[in-house]
Image (tube, rainbow, N blue to C red; front, side, top):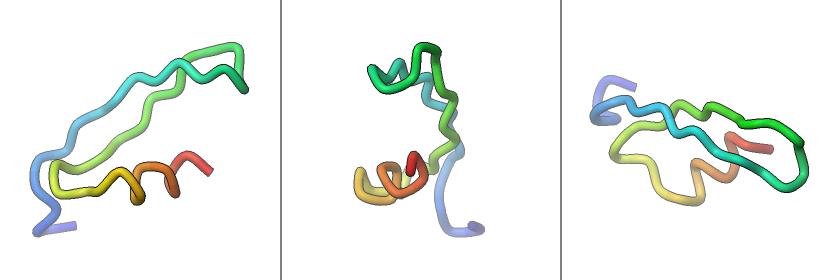
Length: 39
């Protein structure tokens, strides 16, 4: 999004998957938005 702020890629290690997941998020995203992107 244009007003979403700076894009950052988070590297997450999840117990449900045996590898790492890269999740692109924006600085104005909330934790709830990040959780929805993971599903």
